Length: 100
Image 1 (cartoon, rainbow, N blue to C red):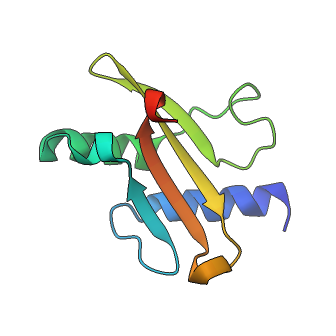
Image 2: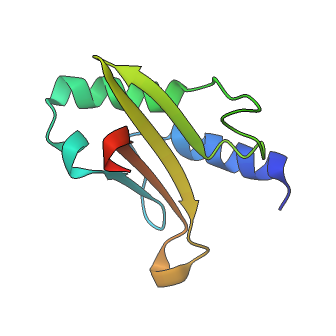
């Protein structure tokens, strides 16, 4: 699978937020999960709509990582391809930067 195909697959996964189902998984770290429902909703929307990819934050062109600020905090999201290991395909993790 080429980088453009990987980017398309990763963008499709994010477009399904919050309705991501097995074998794919949406994972919120403890810090993010403990935020208010309103804040989590906004953060999910920011990940879903993220499109600031460039050579610095996406050197391989796979759209598998993003970083953004919200309410003075830095957040990261990352997509990992588990290739079917343990029954998982793609895992999208959303976290505070300090949780990385």
